[in-house]
Length: 217
Image (tube, rainbow, N blue to C red):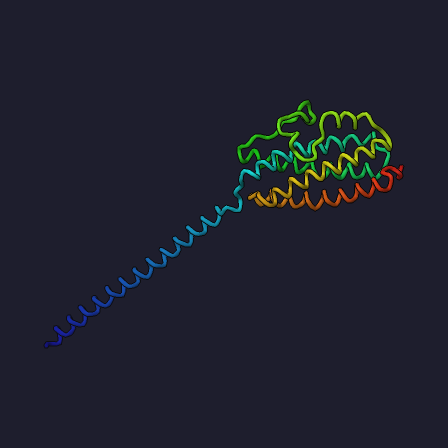
């Protein structure tokens, strides 16, 4: 074979080798691109994971706890000019400080979910509204009217007695949410309600055992 023929043969072999390498590189690159695309898809799926989802129990919890909290606030606000005990007034203030923001938070959830927000009546609680009588710990119109007529030690005792029952109802509702709810922030709030209101129940029972309004400060 002549020198020129050998040169042409070597060039042809080189072209074939380069072409084969290119095919291998494209194939490898394709696999990497596929993996990247799959990873991106997985990332999108993770960002839309069900941790932010809610269920019917979450809706029930928010729609029930909003009016429940509203009634607690109404009771707490009565203590300002009716209670004789500084400890009772302090407790009422803490109840208002804790539950008012929770009402706003739960209202936001319901609006985001496209669910109805329980309405108030005349700026206060509609105690006769549908479903309210079935909520544990909720006071009726007569209970609230009787509390409004009291002052001094009589108010302190009745306020604490009713609020213990009210808190026990809230804890019961919160335990149901913890067991059956799906929305993580709602379950977390339920846990806070169980912890906080259980502690306040113990405090109120202690005040009742001490005579409720022995402290006049």
